[in-house]
Structure formats: structure tokens, C-alpha cells
Length: 154
Image 1 (cartoon, one colour):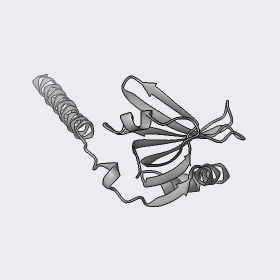
Image 2: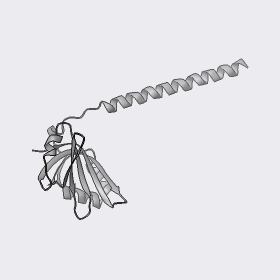
Image 3: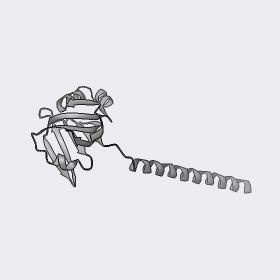
Image 4: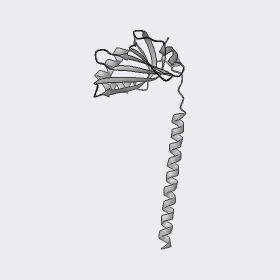
């Protein structure tokens, strides 16, 4: 009878040890991701320089190929500002294709929002940012290509 109880106790210890190790590994990954730093986008050389409409067309024609080519790359995108929005202290800039409704949206890195917030609809601008890829809305039938850590390129 004692051996069964001893066997259960060992099994429970191993399970508890596994849970603790998984928790520690998860905590380490969380800490790494939350403290990840990126180099300033302004100092990075873009992998591609394209117009907003060329980029939208590439995603509309072959979303998978465009995502593979552009996602997580620094792009310099030229176009006319359609919209500037503020959320708390951060500005976002949109380039919208008036025919399809598809759009590019740029979220600016810390310190670059003030300059982006001065843009007005109709302004021509070159924005550098890290492409996050696209999402397609079945409901609205539009592509949304998002960028993070963006800056106004000079």
C-alpha cells in the first residue's frame, strides 16, 4: 500500500516541477518580448521604396506573396495623406485608395507623432516604417496594411 502512495507523491512532485518550469519559461519569454528594443527607424535603410498605390495593388493582386515579401521589412512609402487621427498622444496617418477603400495605416514611434500630427489631408509625404502585413476584411471587402515604428522620412 505504501508503494502506491509513494508512487503518487513522486508523480505529483514531477507534475508540480513541470508546472513551475513552464511558468518560469513563460515568464522569461514575456520579459524578453516586453523589454525588446528596436533601432530607430529613421536610421534604418528601407528594404523597398514604393508608392502607396503600388503597395496596395501588390496586396490586392496576391496577398500571400506581398505579405511574404514585405512583412517585417522597413519600407519607404510615398503618397498623399488621406487622414490623420489622434489616439491619446499618438498620431496615425492613413493613405486610402478611393476606388477600393483599401488603406495603409502608419503608427508612429515615440517622438515622431508630433511631426506626423502636423500633416494635413492632401499632403504628399514619404513615410518609413516596419510593415506588419495586411488583413483582409470580408465584411468591408478591403485590405488594411499596417505599419509600426513609423517616421516621416526627409
